[in-house]
Image (cartoon, rainbow, N blue to C red; front, side, top):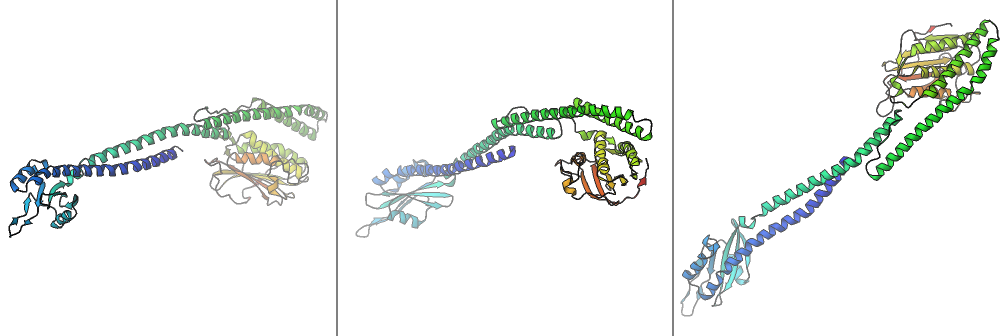
Length: 469
């Protein structure tokens, strides 16, 4: 915007300067020419009184010498010859140097009015003067080219200087005005970007033109509203989680009365784990504050998180007679995702397997790096019936036609992937059922907010090893 204003101001000022300077320059040139010829006419008129009295050479030469142009050798007098009866007559008189052509002199005598003709080195003014005898004498005054253009170059340089000064001044003023408009706009854009990155405390100074001040007020109001909405959401999450404590307490008491069997111990362990998760949700919701750094800056070891969650789900799988296979977690794998978020995503995927497949259905979890080493891929596959409409299943709140499903589990998984520049794909697994591919980018997002992911590796299951809980 700043450079656009400068360019517009430059174009307008240049057009205005040219519109005034060019005609003014031509007027100055014509004025200088008129001034030179007016001076020459006065020099010619100074000889007219002498010509009306006498045509003798001596008096005329003295009259020519008394003028400035005559003293410089630029005045000439041309008197035609006069014939008389009986053969006697007056010869032609030529005083000074003739520069004009004879044809021009004759033309001036036939039309007795002052004319100007171009000669070598300048111009000649031919002034006709009527003699007492009725003949026409011609006074020729030479006007050098230097006098015709005297002062024109200086005037044009002054005009050019004034024009350049006007252009520079207008550009400077436009630049200052542009800065006043652009800086508030840049601050507003920067604040919007920071808000998009999760820095909820950012605000914009209400400065600049009225329109940008209004935009800054609207932005600050929006940011306050976002903070308030997030606070309300955290309170709601905490309240809902707190309400679960009562049925959890009853469930824990009932589990305590089951005895000492292996199934009872597993039930009590599951209830304790569920209670810890609810406590974590309440504590996190109560203590959450606006982020000053993107959450992707905090990472975790994906292998450790997956091993820990698989230890929990493997116990349930053993009770239902499910075969569990786990691969790719034998070495640390750092990803830019908080451990709790990855655990929630994995629990959502494995919970779907247990809810939507019959007992005894096998499932597998694979973890490996992409071919370009720019992403980590987590594959959760099962041997069930699969997902009929993968596209619909990825939409928030859409269960894809599965009974008893809210459709929010896959949305949790999708948000975890997209926070790193990755994505989630659903397809058919080699086990025969559904395969959910969680692509977690290691390079993050670029400046346009799109994934910087390279080509995906194949669907091979090489390197998978069986783990029995």
